[in-house]
Image (cartoon, rainbow, N blue to C red; front, side):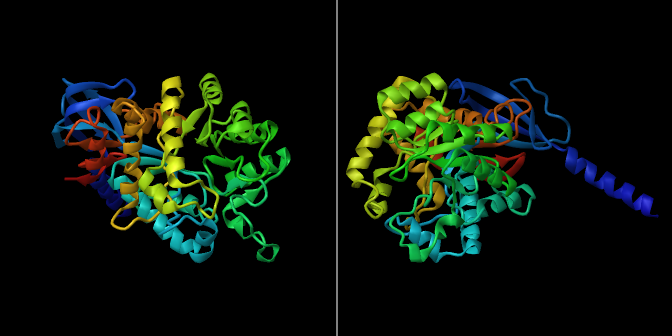
Length: 416
């Protein structure tokens, strides 16, 4: 009897597991080249794209989705998120750490991750400030199928010189920042911190190189990179410019995060070494709300002008870039995804063509994440992370604000 029951269950489940979905796509964008192919059939099975082409035969019994009037492309990616952070006013990280529990920040992070997915971001790299590995648990919950969300890279605690990104903390307060940071002040300590992060579930690594009067040496950066690469993890490093940035680039980091003060010389060195720039190019609207962050940041006008100049120069020099936002605010009437998409206007103002911006949000980000050949393209063998818009983002990048269709690992999660 039990054997018959099991056989019946398997027969019942088989069609669902094996069902093919066919997408009739009017315009398919290849972000790697900027090319558009028309009237394509995309076949999806078991979460992956199995075939793409104009003459692909749709199997009998396949579910058919009509996107013949849409612009179809791989899902977007954000290479610099802090999903569990959310400041309602002037940025003051120390206050954020103290006023919200890890549980509350986990719920906020999951909400933000799901907002991002609904807007078309099927992949994100969450780079710390995450309340004691909360982002790792959000990622695990999504991977286990408990919740729908984007595919995530999570760095866990940020590795930094003593004090992390906190400032002017009296000794009576103690090292409360250790929920957010791993203190590491020698190559051996850096190496150990990488191992600890990996042990607790990080699948990417982030360092802060220059947020103190002291900064990491090339040797210390290289120690982190060596240890992370042995485990198959990439390393992003928060650094603005100067000698610290040179150490980061020569130390072999996979990406420079922010890089607001990078000179042309350092940008050319990044191009030579293949270091990716994740510029976190803040919109002026956001900078005004962030304020001076307790005197850490210059006035919004100064920062905005510098961001536009550096972004323009990086593009002109040919530095490989990946789109990253660094949103840590809660703005009235806006979701986290709305604020992520605010950054598109900055790229346009800096003179970046829409095709290049889209490439940085897909192809380049996927390569930085280590997902080349797995995610980031509409091609056979890739994960079926597919989005669609009613107008062409290659003509106007703001088209990405109106994503009408989202498929994540072969499952439709949004269809308008």
